Amino acid sequence: MRALIPMLGVAMMAAACAPAPVDPSQSYFAPNYRGIETRRLDDELVSFLVRMEGARTNADVADYAKCAAAQYALIRGFGFARHVRTSVQEEGGLWVGDAVYTISAALPKGLQTIDAEVVVSECAETGIPTV
Image (cartoon, rainbow, N blue to C red):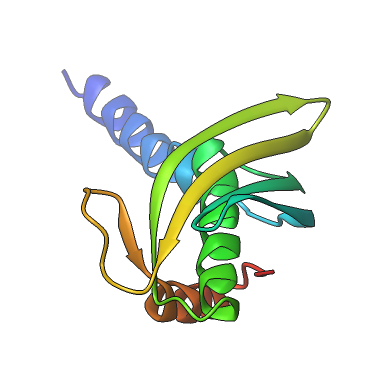
């Protein structure tokens, strides 16, 4: 029994020194935003093609497109946008997102609406470029 106690102590010290498991969502994030193409589909319907490297997930690409849509709405004199769809593809480290938004002066109906001024401010705080 006495021989077991020192071994337990060594095992506990070794466990305390072991590195903590890495959480992928907390990993280093250094995106390279490669540009935004804006295509007006109708008076209030706009497509945004965004490209970036270093995205962690599709959500990073969607956020980039959201920032572009918010700034575009403000440029056009609108205060709101509503997300219609976003498709994301990644190949060889280059992520491409194709997002469609409606823009409007009044808060549109729907669940995925954005207040353009608020979103543009959030994008500036997080370092995501806009149009």
